[in-house]
Image 1 (cartoon, rainbow, N blue to C red):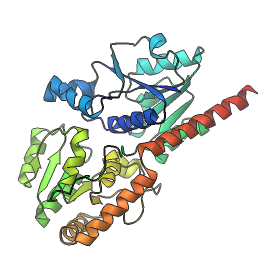
Image 2 (tube, helix red, strand yellow):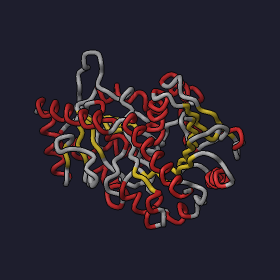
Image 3 (cartoon, rainbow, N blue to C red):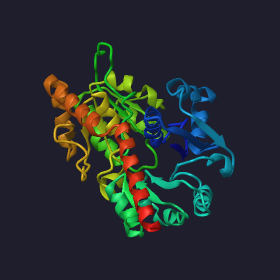
Image 4 (cartoon, rainbow, N blue to C red):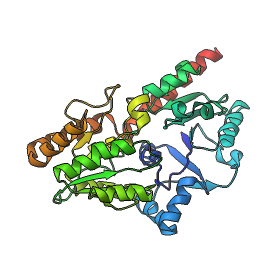
Length: 369
């Protein structure tokens, strides 16, 4: 089959976590023998910020890590006759411009012979529902939601059995423990964006203060750290390194003893069951992980895959235990990796997507009968 995916960006992962999953998805679709084409705006927000942050050379990290990933850019509204020619499956990500979301839907409704899916991997359905409901999805065959609680929002909006839960996952061709002898692991690492203050208090309570209290060195990577955020990191003795290309994350994990999951507030309170993709990636790499309060309401992980801290005091206790107990670190490393490789790889998500497409086809055949 020929897949066409409209994304905010495949090339840039600057404050764009869905690019991590999409890159792995493209890889696994290609391995399965499918044809894939990805389209992204030439002036997309993530791409523009990546270039502003690191210059045009920052784009080279994508080309080096993913030389076989097909991506085309467009300005304004793309030529849909060309973009959708021969397509069997078209997926449009929720950060695509509303006018393009609508235009692709109209193309499908006017006789396009492909299955059209809308892919939602964000919290805007609960944080800005008016904007999401304003999107014209009338021509779409279904919605892919990256968590059950998000899927339930779409069901309340009338999508019924046309919404499907489709979690993100780890690209295990990239995210795995080091093949060479492991380097010496020291201290903590946190990779994430400061953003719009969605977890500022949580970062201080569950990352910065516990690491300083326990006396663990802390390295922080990410973007959108305003001066006051950098000053906060410095006050706690954390070392801030700026943007890190996602393809370089595995070797960064490999140098550290543990990492911490601090979900954004919407995922901790309003959309439980949706982990950041960093959880999948960290566990795939075999680095022990401790999570701030987050409800795994869908049972994605097993007890013992990572440690759960209900309070800042529990976070401190877990970090102390990890720093002194090599057996605990080894058990967490093995358990977490086993769960990801058996359930949460991009290859698993390709299988799930194929099952979703088969379900839609059967439903359409029943409707035509």
